[in-house]
Image (cartoon, rainbow, N blue to C red):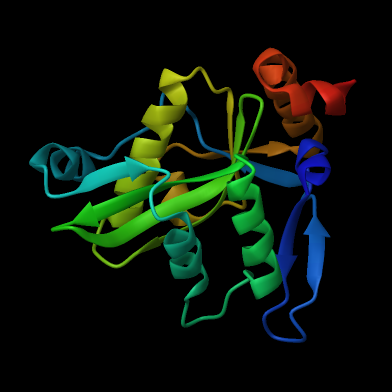
Length: 194
């Protein structure tokens, strides 16, 4: 799994058939800006209101399972969930959890390699909770000098934050730079680049 992400691939399960896991490397990849993230005014007010509390890496399994719990189907099979739980245990997968009145109401999770974060999925049970999770994750990544926030595919939800698409070759350059510059602090990445 780690080698696949370092090579630009990510897994998705087919929820409509047998749940088989397939590997993807799209020609266009969505990147969310870590520096220069656009936060809409209404969301800025929500963030200042104090209605939500965010915590880094709290309730990882609950966040992943909430992301998989969708009425329209999910690409998160139990096999993929179990792999991410294992990656979390190894210190490779993380989440940003969002709470309102002590209840988990939103979150985002993904995997880290070097100075790259691969966002897998997000969820909300309260309006704006997933947006708060994304903004708080970007703040956390910016404070730690991350260079790449990969969001895989473009959505209207991501576009409002200034997300943009890059072609495969440009994505590979961004990914390699984030891996190389993070290799000193990440021995596994150094080994992969070896």
